[in-house]
Structure formats: C-alpha cells, structure tokens
Image 1 (spheres, rainbow, N blue to C red):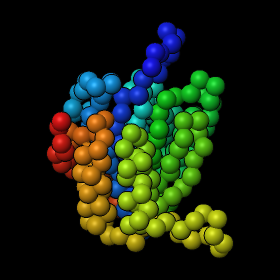
Image 2: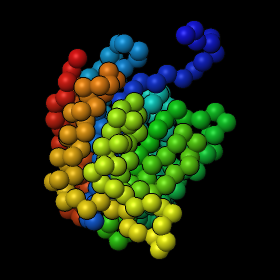
Image 3: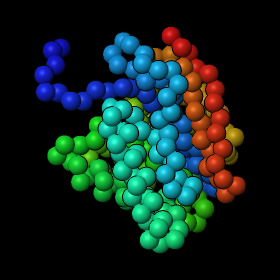
Image 4: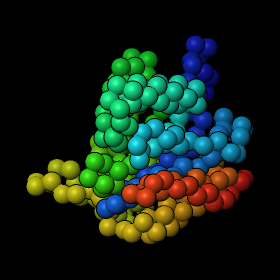
Length: 221
C-alpha cells in the first residue's frame, strides 16, 4: 500500500497490559520498538511514572508518545507546586483524557493504559482511545498484541458489565502473584504470534508499599 507524502504517523508497535486488584495494580509492556519489519531497539521502556502510585503505558507512534508523556509530566509538576501534593491516579486519568481530547483534530497517535491506586488504596485501570474517551475497568490491553491478549483476560478475569445496576466493583479476584503470572503467560503467548511484541517484558507492580519493577526475557525473533 502506498503512503501519502504528507502522512506523519508511524505505528512503532508493542503491547501494554494492566490488571487492577483489591490493593494492587500490575502494569506491563514489552520493550521492542519497530518500524515495519525492522527492529529499532530491543530495550525501550513504554511505561512512564507520572503521579503518586500511578503509571502510564503507551503504544503507538513514538514521537507522539514522548510528547504526551512530557506534557503530562509538566502538568503534574505544576499541580504539585500549586497544591503541595502529588496528583492522584483518578485525577491523572481525567487530565490524560482532557489532553487527548484537546488534540482530537490532530490527535496523538498513542493508545494508553493508565494504572495505579485510587484514594481508597484500591487498584484502578483506565483504558483510552486516541481522542480521550476513557473508562475505568478491572483490566485492559492496548497495542499491536491487544487483540490476542484481551480474549484471554476476558476468559480468566470476567469483569462485570458497566451496564449492571447496582454497579459492581471492577477489580479482579486474583492475588498479586497470580496477576503477575497471568501477565507473563499472556505476553509469552502474544510474542509467539505478533512480530511487533517481544525481546523483554517490563512489569511494574504498584501497592501500598510502593512501586516495584521486574524484567523477564521474551522471544527475540
């Protein structure tokens, strides 16, 4: 397929996943950065620490992702100076939605999953489209491998429908270690079938004790 000369977007691939539990949140992404059939780097983090117990994982066009992360970090720093406290995860979720919607006519080509803990200490995951529409869920996946991963998460976690009344809690029933194991399993499977996902998996676990990072190797071909 021929590309228009004024086309400014490129999808650099990669996959992001987040799972919220009763008192934790797991956010994970692979570290491969690609263009077409070429791998630009095998060690690029797609996860950005933004606010207090809140991280953002993004897949899409790397230039727009960097600009978006820089914009959000600057806005969070202004908030910190004005209010003498870090921004909460739900507040950052709303700020991200507003930032994406503001650019809706020339959008950031970035597909985001925001994960962290809310003011009650519960895990929360917010999933987005490119123009700021978002939803709080118990789990989500974005990126080139999301269509392979989401059916597995739906089968294993069975999040209640947001249309149910009264509303039910969206957090997953798994323990923290079980959620981390599930993330490792779905990425191992997606890496076998998606050429833009691979090399290494970065797993960030957020709980009341703080934030921990873990890396595991994935397929490199």
